[in-house]
Image (tube, rainbow over all chains, first blue to last red; front, side, top):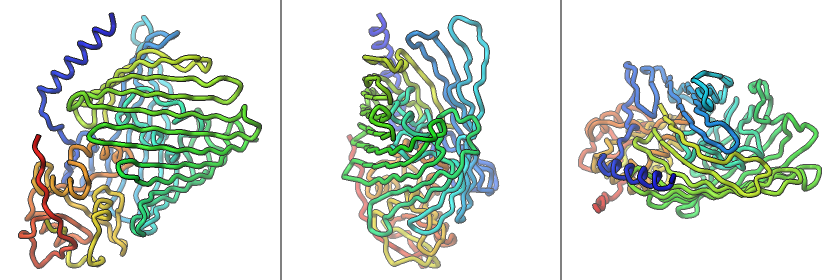
Length: 351
Length: 125
């Protein structure tokens, strides 16, 4: 019964999409700064000539997963603050409210807040044409998904396990990064070092206690290729040194997109401590703003457990560049890792 | 189409299209002498903007929405947009580090041409 309903819904979206302007409404035509405050949807609020910009994103998620009550959640609400006056130093910060549950099951509406976290805070210092120094708390440059994981930027409500579990999503320390194009090389690089965990008081996501790593990326025609390496210890596993190797790619052609990542984490105490996984995801336009998605993932967690296969078919509708409405159904086989399965939908907005 | 900078901007005599793309994707933020680069666009419907985007960036402006959303997530804004070629010439002439593109007939003695690019017509379906 569900599939005919889904099919009618897709047809209606395509008709609606065809009735709208064929060219998307661009939110990103910014005039030079002026004394007046200036707001653009998807690009934030500029405070006159100060160099300050406020912005962020929000996301509401509905989940009806196996073995759980249906749940409506404000899955993320982030506020950005950036400062950039064109000098050699610029500043960025992100504060996030996570997993604010609005309603669960058949109970009346209530609220239970999870936490407010300082997701990122750093200063960038321009050193030369090929090198910028970043100091503070920043996203760990492993793979592609972690660096663009904000809900309005990704195609699906769920996140691949391999893009999150094998490593800490953020690093507090220093990173040197840049683009070697001035030297005639098509190569982007980043090299980083964990120095402290004092900016991660909750330590919910297994932060690094020590880490050093790198990521490089280049182009082969329409394909972007990346390679990651990291050597680290995590707070909850301080005696175990780990090495992580990763490959990532993105291929695009006329609005069709295929992306994927492979990560292998080698533990110190034998192959049972290793962890690895991969995913491949494709996006195909059905109309100007409606896309069909499909993702396959395999993830083998550490321990004596077999790996799990995950499949996620999804739809994504982008009526405006900063706004996305998504629906998906995830299912697995051999789910000893108890990966969430079922229906989820979300609305996400960059503001 | 002429790629122009201020006469006072002390940079090398020419620029590759790869470097130009890097500037307009906000990957390259400073000139070699440390002056901040200020790239300028015309409006998304302007013929020159669409030709520049296709020739240098390999994408039409609306195809870069996802890219600029991702850059916003990292605190990077897209190039500023000015209303006309005349305003671009005036802005470039008076702003150190600024770079823009105009028809070759619109340049004056206050700007320096780094590069000439051919205009390409937009294919209509």
